[in-house]
View 1: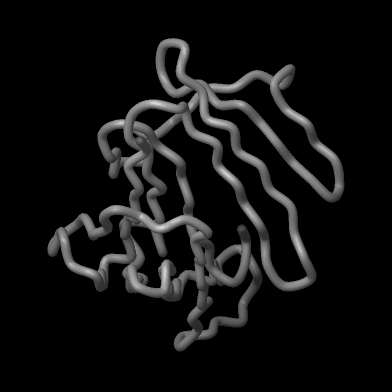
View 2: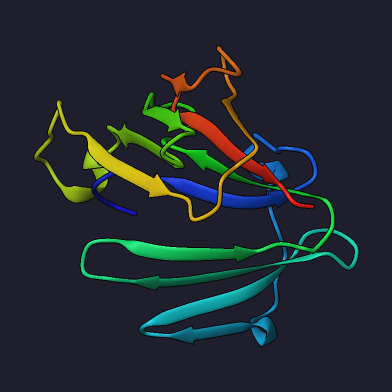
Length: 157
């Protein structure tokens, strides 16, 4: 996104993949539905495993739904920023949410005006409780991450 920072949400199964190049999931356009009010795609998660991702929006937020394979573990990796830009994220397991900010407005793409104190804030609320959560980066496993990379996960039964 060219302005207001961005947040990466990536559904995963099995091991947590913290590097963007390791998280790629293939898909085909035959497995997607794209309309102005709704988007859905089945992504390949290795072998015959697939994850369905659905998205729609309201005036001020987006709704995402991930449908994971019935057996195994599932997780959603949340990154508040990219590796070269220090964002912030906080996991509140009791409230089932991850909050934080991203200071990357990408001023170089938007013109000559820079906003040195800009922060794009986010709140991610989960419908289902996650069994565990933590961070990765310089201080893994904590509920706060100044590096901007967090993950919330839930093990399926």
